[in-house]
Image (tube, rainbow, N blue to C red; front, side, top):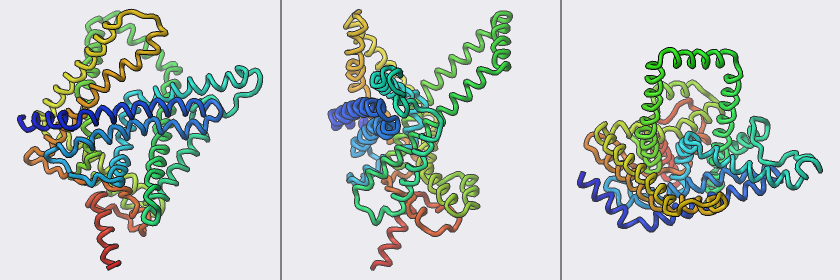
Length: 423
């Protein structure tokens, strides 16, 4: 406990200004890209879709930078090279878990809603609200169709090619690879979200759904204790999500950024990919190697033990409560105002509170991860995140297997062999 408190204090004392700067910079760029995407989307939806993922990437980069900033203060963290390639590597491996968290918590929907509101307003104004000319491919309407699927496929192919030929390309193409990764991941989660929305709409329109709702209402009216039990279950689920799932998700993101690893893919998944051949097999193995870091980071949560994670969850809950209370007190301090006032100043107030709260959250999560790694018997290693760990697998002959050592070890072995040949 004392070691964790020392780590937490060291993070705040040494890195608070940098953490605040990274957060504010990420939020500023996020808003800038949302506005730019909406402006372009008002004239071409495709152009807006190519810019909107950068809004998510701005927040991703800021959080990755915040976690890497505090790494020197962690007693059990990998030192890291601190260079451009190391930073891009951490961003690349964090894209998938961050997008999953971002989409699950509704932030992706919020960005798309803001994008549509801006783009549709511009499109309707330019076309005389649809009377002067057809809106066509403008207005920022995102739906399941040929356009998003095409963007996803092209971005994924570009990402694979950049990974395959990365050794022959200049360093600046790493940024292009990161953009392609962000773009195809953004479109994937967008399409999945659109598909789930259509499934819910289809279900709500079925007669069976109305029948189940009627039965539920009848049971609630006839047997009130059952209704109370059901409400209690829903309340408990909400508490578990807020108290367990959210802090666990942030701990997994930190583990991915720091390169936590102690295990490879589950044997059942590895056996599945061993039977695949050709381009499909290479792509499947590349995607599974990308998931390997996430698998290790998630498993690091239970490797830390229930007591350690329980303490971390309690501290996180106290932080979340303090943030809400600070926001409420700030709103009470300004008192009642008209809607125009709140539309202008409320976002600035929320960002002001977050500029203090987010560095605290990063310090809490990083301290918890350091305690998990340092726990005796955890068996967790921390290594630098490798850039394009799947690149050599994509470019190598297809032998139908996944390297058991993990993505980072594969890259290291390849580089060693190349040096041996060259020497």
